[in-house]
Image 1: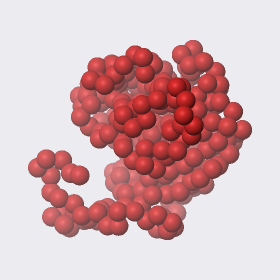
Image 2 (image 1 turned 30 degrees about the horizontal axis):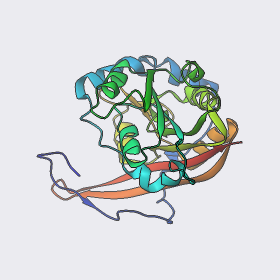
Image 3 (image 1 turned 90 degrees about the vertical axis):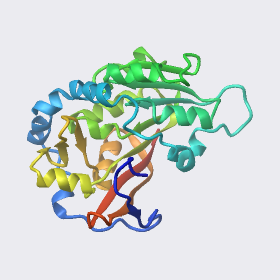
Image 4 (image 1 turned 90 degrees about the horizontal axis):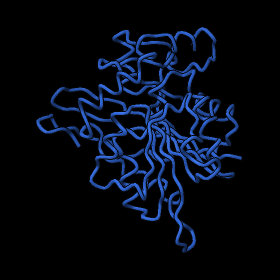
Length: 279
């Protein structure tokens, strides 16, 4: 779907399920874990002030920028639904909840869910609380920088069935990602899962940022509004989660080729999707 007044786009194919992702330029595929790389990421102006820029983002756009993410219930519904009839539903934690575009569709689809939701932007948390479908009986939402603040201060340890990281890890410096995963592990039940969806290497947005010299460090960029974005390869993602003690249940790259005929351009959109289990 395109914004009002924007030129129409043609999407083809809608999905490339079961097909290997197209080849990506080697400049995007390195997964070296270098101290200098991490230091460069963390000390960059936009990385250090990421919370400030995301606050500005939500103050400007409110809840109008992102569309509701209904694909979670379709792709991963079995992780949210109860397999047996019971009065108690599963418990989900959304890390990086934004304006609630993930949690509200999930609660509508799975009414038994109880949801914890956090974001390091206070503006985002305020937007969730102001949503017409917000209920304090169903949602515990709080401000938290999951890279440094203890999630167990707001969520009882080992009580969460599923943690969702939907375009969350890409917004932070690569050196903070392992801390976020370790934090999530402290609230996940044994045999609980993390569900990940994020940007993949070679995505057209990365190519544009790279060509504009907006790279902070390897596969990590700043946008024009000051927010940041990291682009994941399957190998990098696997290494990241395995190093944090998670087992890989599934990981793949989702690709969509979008052609804008009025501008005569074709864009390769790429996302990483993964399911990771806590042992």
